[in-house]
Length: 196
Image (cartoon, rainbow, N blue to C red; front, side, top):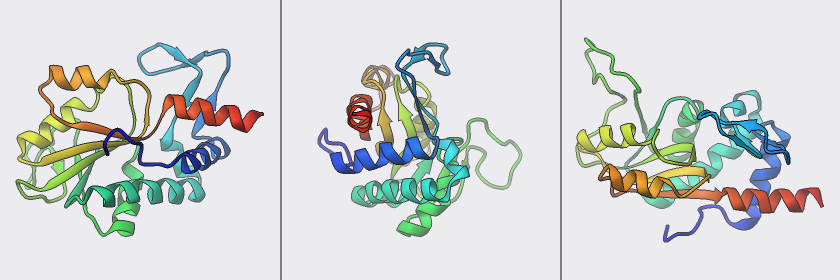
């Protein structure tokens, strides 16, 4: 990890091309694309849209698979929504099982109310998600993993939008690094080369 992206520059460019072609990336030079928090941006990523493209699904699953294998984890943890439909494909490609951490507990179940999928205390895991900005949406899942006894070694994301997650994790006593495939600056740089 050591501050390096898990995608090489040529792989980042290929990822940007695929995301544009498959509708996973919107770009507006006017900066009028609305984010979940109400702010606007020039780049909007929606990896959930991979569901409409076998090419995008395979491309993303292969990329995430390599980063997960590089971490040598026993399991990976997915946060519901963005990458949920990729988790099974990644498991098939890597042979590494996954666990889903729920946003809300399922009370009165025979199995764990917070987790779907078995794990053992002490398992070395990484959390996967699409994008990180402030990191606030990652905190509950990471905390649940730590409270359950999992050893969270990294949060693997495709895109690091900002580095605000550093402060958020520190404020929440989380000693976990984010390992991005690329930064928002990388995406902007690659989009410039595509439009020249």
